[in-house]
Each structure stands twice: as C-alpha cells, then as structure tokens.
Length: 255
Image (cartoon, rainbow, N blue to C red):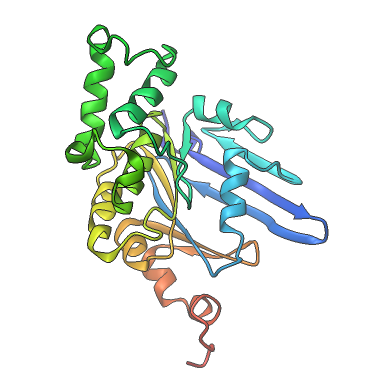
C-alpha cells in the first residue's frame, strides 16, 4: 500500500465544543500518523482535557469530525471506540481500590476476550489470560506489587497500573492524560521508562505538563491555546518558537 494512501491513526477536522457562550475547543484540526509519539501541551485552561474527552466520546462535539484509522467515530459511544482500538488513561486514576493489580488486569483482559468476570474462579483453565497478566505486570514494573491492594500501592505504581490497564485493551491508539501528574520525583523515572517502552506500532497521544517527559518522548508536539492549535511541529521547532515562549511560558516576544 502506498504510504500516502494510509489514513492517519487519529484525525480531527474542525472539531468544536461549546458550553453556552464558551468555546472550549475551537476548530481543532489535527492529524496524528500511525505509530507517532505526539504530545499535546498548553497552559492551564487551554482545552487539553476537553479535547481528550471529545476524542474518547466522553463529550459530544458541537461540530466537526473525529476519525480513527479513517473511520468516522464522531458519534460513537466510548466503549465502541475502545473496541475499535482506542484507549486512554485519566488525570485522576479510575482504578478499583480493593482489587490487586493481578485482579484488575485479569478483569480487563477477560472483558476484552468476552469471558466475563469469572476468569479468577478457575485461572488454570485460562492459561492465555494468566500469561498476558504476567507479561503486563513485567512490562509495567508491577510484578513486585501484583498481589497488593491498589489502594495501598505507591502513587507511581498506581499510575503504572492505569497505563497497564489501558494497554490491556490492546489499543492501536493510546491517549495518556498526564500520566506523571502527582507522581513523586523518585518514582517518575518508572513512568518515563514505561511510556518510552510502548510498542512502536501503538500510536500515542500524550498530554503532559512535565516537559522532560514531553521532549524525551515526543516526535511531534501540538501547542493548544484557548481551545485552538496554536503551534505544531517537532520538539526543536516548538522549543525555538517565540510564540510558544510568549504564550505558553508567559514571556514577551522581545525576551
């Protein structure tokens, strides 16, 4: 297949979301290539989380389109987008506090396979589920805490578990909403390593305030300001752009 004929992994066309007189997403058009490491940054209130909620179906757009691998998913419910290959994490984790990482991942895998919630009653009868749980625990550095209740895990491990949970859906497009938010400095290296180690065939859109993670991870960056894509380019181009310094860093254009 001619690469030029391959549709983007994720695309928005003139996407808009209005809350009364407030325009939270304003004619956002983005194209994220397959396998890309794309970061979305911007000051507080720029509309980053609104955009992610639109992409994942939590919010319905006022106008515009969203395409996943060329398929229009603008009106699809969140669970249908997951089945088509989109998964996400959240700024504030959405984990089951009383379950262990083993149980959490087992439930996610069983749901994906359509085997319901009874995998744990006879785990030996589902060796493929057990094997996948083990692989996820190892990939996301959770083996040592696999049988501990999620509520008592260090926060960095909770964030890793949430990434693992999204990855258990076997997404083609993975949206990471501030995966390092609230994680102590001593634990951040594990988040960075986990994100950097995601398979190359999984397209990743990262929303993150930690610029070390952004510039280490991303091959392309979009800067969102007042609900609009203000600047887009490579990390070097964005870092050198005086408009980014003026708006995102709060510096004047003459600085």
